[in-house]
Each structure stands twice: as C-alpha cells, then as structure tokens.
Amino acid sequence: MLFPVYKPGDLYYVILVFELAIYLWIGSQVESMNDTLRFCFCIPTLFGVEGLVSDELRRMNMQDVRTEDGRVFFTGGLGDCARVNLSLRCGERVLMELGSFPAKSFDQLFEGVRALPWENLLPRDAAFPVTGYSLDSALFSVPDCQRIIKKAIVERMKSRYHLEHFPETGAEYKIRFSLRKDLVSVFLDTSGTALHKRGYRPAHTEASLRETLAAAMVKLSRYRGKGDFCDPFCGSGTIAIEAALAALNRAPGLYRSFAAENWAFVDPTIWQNARAEAIAAEYSGEYHIFASDIDPRAVQIARENAVRAGVDHLIDFSVADACSFSRETERGVIVTNPPYGERLLDQQQAEALYRNFGAALSGSRNWSLYLLSSHSEFEHFFGKPADKKRKLYNGMIKCDLFMYFK
Image 1 (tube, rainbow, N blue to C red):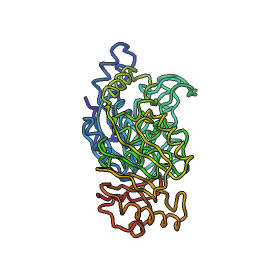
Image 2 (tube, one colour):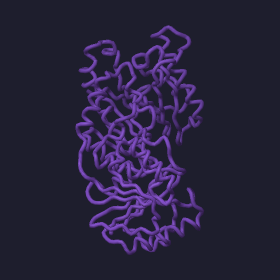
Image 3 (cartoon, rainbow, N blue to C red):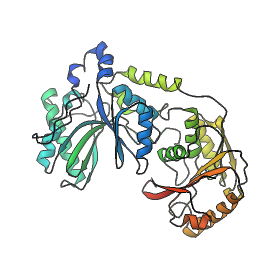
Image 4 (cartoon, one colour):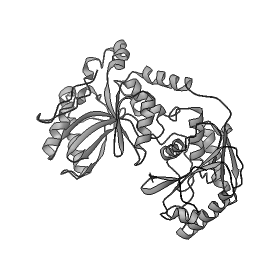
C-alpha cells in the first residue's frame, strides 16, 4: 500500500510515508508487515547518469521510476530498499522520503518537520544528524535549516520519550533534506556511507575516479562480459574492477554495510534475504579484462584493490605505456580516464598525451573507445572527432565521455 499524499492547499501538505507505530514492536509479525508497506525512495546521482540509474531501477523491477536533475525516484518496500542498496551501480545513496511540504519561513519549516511521526522512527538513543542543501529558495542558510529541523524533531520526540536531552549514542538515522524552489523534502539515509564507497579501495592513487562514475562509463560502453575490455590508464584500477563486477553480475555493495541494517523498525532478515538473492544471481565465466598503467606503483595498488573486490583473478594487470598501445583483438572496448590538466598533468602535457595516444590507436583495429576528458579541445589533439559525446561530471569537474565506435 502507498501512504496518502496531502495536496497543496492543506495547511502543510506532507507525503506521509510512515505509519510505523502499528507494527514497530509487533515482533514476529514485523517481516510480513515490512513486505507489504510501500515507500517513496530517492536516489541522488552524479549529473549525467540519471538515465542510467533509471534503467538500473527498471531492470530491478522497481515501480513508479521518475527522474529529475541529479536524482531519481521510485516506490518500493523495505526489501526493495535493501536490494537497491546492494545492487545499484551508478547511484550515490538510497534515501527514504518522509515528507514534502512548502516552506518560505522558518516557522513553516519547523511545523512541517514536526508533523512527521518521528517517535515511530527514532528510538530513544538514536543518533540523528541533519544535513542538506538549499537551491533557489527563500530559506537559503543551510546551517539555520539544519538547526530548525533538528529542533522540530526533538520537540516531536519529547512527547514520546519525556526527555529534554537525547543522548544520541545508538544507531545512526541520518536525516537529509533538500530545499528546491521553496519545497522541502525530508529523507532518512538508508545507505549511510555513500554507495560509491564499495569497500575495495581504501588505498588509491592521486585523482582517483569515483566508483559510480566508473560503473556508468562501463555501462555506457555496453560491456557485458563478452569480448575484450581494456583500460590502458588504469590508475587505481577502478574502471577495470567495475567492469569485472558487471561481468559477474556481482552486487557492488555485497561486502559492505548499510545504515538501515541497524534500524529498529527494519527486520534484519530482509537484508539477509537480499544478500542471498544477490549471490544467487551471480554469473561465472571466462572474461578478458586488461588494465595497465605506466606507473608501477599505481598498478600495484590496482592489484590490491582488485583482491579486496574479489576479482583479481579476472583482470590481467601490467605496467605499460598507453602511448605505445598495440594490443590486438577481434572485438574489444577501451574504457579509460587518462590524466588531464586539472588532475595529474599540466595542460601541455595532457595535450601531448592525447596526441600520442591517438596516434597509437590509429593503427589498432576492432577496438571501440570510451574516453573521459575535461579538455574542450580533446578531439583536436586526439586527431579524430568522436562519433558521440556525453556530458558527465568527475566530482566537480565537467567532462565529456568521447565515444568512438571503431
């Protein structure tokens, strides 16, 4: 079932997605109740990958998928929440929406937040930090909004727990808010640590690529485990590792933890079942994934990261100069993120690198290329116009993914 949506025109219209009091302490009935409840979830994304995240969610059979700039929504149960956290490759977090209402004043913000059933969500010892952002809104001070939201939650919880001060020594229930054009949305962060932190890369080389963006590049290349895959500027190995995970159909979050696993109102068997399903869905096969870098230290770190990801046996690592690329293939794809001006090289060095790499690839056959760069004149120095380009963001750096289809 979906919870009611209160329309604009009410004193506060709040999308109440929780009526958890009826089952919070029911014990053995929690699992069946969890399976029937439906919630609205929000997936923040890097700009440019919203469509990929939407496609992932639809392939997982999530319902009511819709996109906005920088985020994707869907409806589902707590089991769906666990499955998406475990298996989503390109999204940043899974946020459970508690409510949405207009607020042009701090009084409206306070009353809207206090209207939510916090006492049914947060136990007495819950840690509930508040974070968020404001865009094009009358309430533009994020610290002031954080303070008001926190105060409203405390006032609501006082009536349940009869406390003036809450210790916040228990499990974390991180609260996130967005303020867009005077519309507030309030969320619980089910993920905790961001989803791009898979757990395999505690060590990394300078200027590493976010795992979710690497996964997006692999997805855009249409690599599914067939043919050869190569990253000749592998750095810490992120792109090759994400390619191996995709080839195996391995859930990228399988070996990490999530905040909602520790929440009082979530049955732990939901997460156990989701992990078992993810393991059962894995593939096995022989894959041809190659990763190289001119820096021996980077290659060593990449190998160590692949070991932690459990895919080191699938990737052939080597020390090699990409500007001398000569690998042969009958059908292969190169997905790579070479150094560019804002990263490890100055502008002239990057341009020389593009020129030399382009010359090396000009003699290669049967390779398609997906290359990420922020250089506006990349195609000029590479020596060939791209067949297609797609805007992506590597952190705060605006880039293009240059696509060459042979």
